[in-house]
Image (cartoon, rainbow, N blue to C red; front, side, top):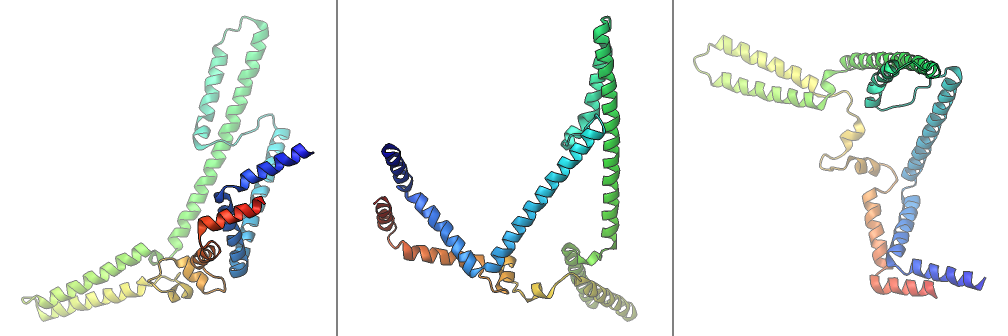
Length: 272
């Protein structure tokens, strides 16, 4: 018992003799306390998100296990999940195997039955893989068609690139108006008609520039702030991540005013 206790004490002293371990524990402790007390809503949302993702992965695993059990019970052929390149090579590999079994000599009656069974098995696999890949490809095509139809229904001017194109088009129209005004040999009627057409196009572009998806919360955020996430979080009661980080640095400076002396004192105190 004494030897075990002395070994345990020695190992504990060796572990906590390094200052990096103490600083790591201190950082984690400060992060935890600051998040719980100064940003409880964000921490609660993060925990709910992690629990939700964990539950989803567990459900997917259980569903996959149930499907695999059902396929193994119902049919002798079970399709394994493969990558994209693996799916491409499934049928080709099975055809190569079947050709190899067909070309083998069949003089021996014992091996003949084995080869026939292998050829039948390869044929069954080829049919199963072909059927599965065909259904998967049809499903993918349907999803792509639905996505394409949905994109066509959406407003074309909600895209920021198209908004920039509209703004550039308005600038070009203003330049055309100035050019028509400076042009001397042009008739007044033609000049007025072209300027009116330019103004009409400008009104059309300006009406289409504003995207319907813009929210009042994002409009209230200042344009100079590059970090949108921190700006949105400022609207809630939680302290932003930048403020938490700076506050953690201040607390560490207060706790560890002279780092080496304080850490060595903590180490000596823990060893004693």
